[in-house]
Amino acid sequence: MKKVLFVLTSHDKLGETGKKTGFWVEEFAAPYYYLADRDVAITLASPKGGQPPIDPSSETPDSQTSATDRFNEDTELQKKLANTHILENIKESDYDAVFYPGGHGPLWDLAEDKNSTRLIEEFYTKNKPVAAVCHAPAVFKNTKIQGESLVKGKDVTGFSNTEEEAVQLTDVVPFLVEDMLQNNGGNYSKAGDWQPYATVDGHLITGQNPASSELVAEHLLKQL
Image (cartoon, rainbow, N blue to C red; front, side, top):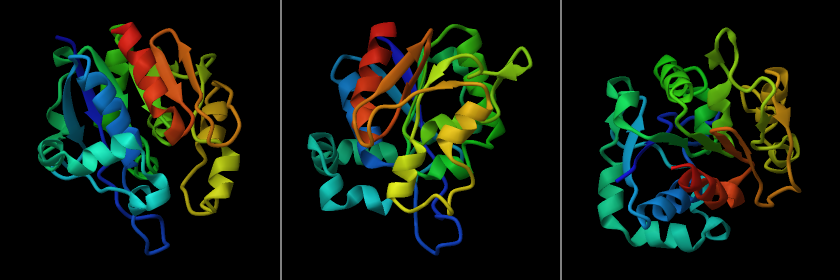
């Protein structure tokens, strides 16, 4: 049985707005069920361990999908989510791939988290799939392979500047995912706003937005 590590944010403050953020339920639930239904064992981790914060915006009626509906009824998965492992204690050697769900939270903590950066570099160096969707490609901000940014010269995507503008958080977030990936030398591309879109470059897999989450999981499973 293949083993995949899911890394979730522990950050719940949306900048200085006084509002809450966290991870996006759809971007966790859709890939989780897609992989788990195909006999992939999934371990959950976060920087602080325990319950990762859920972005309240991802629980609104218009953000619901069949995957989120299933999650809302799944007490077993909710219990598992409430007890995520502490990221610092995770070893790359125990897993076949790593996946990062989005939500705005990762922009603040996982983008700067040294344990996350180290794990990504280890997975990538061992030719294991590294996948991230929506805001989660923020985790590549500081990752380096042989002194160069991991995304340099690679085909990547992530939450676009126009999508950030649409949700009116351009001036709230610490950086824009699209800009960061380009500044780090990535070959950034995107589809229309809110359309499913993913890129695969070797064993680096990225998705643009919530609609792309299951697509990323499909590419991840193919590589496994």
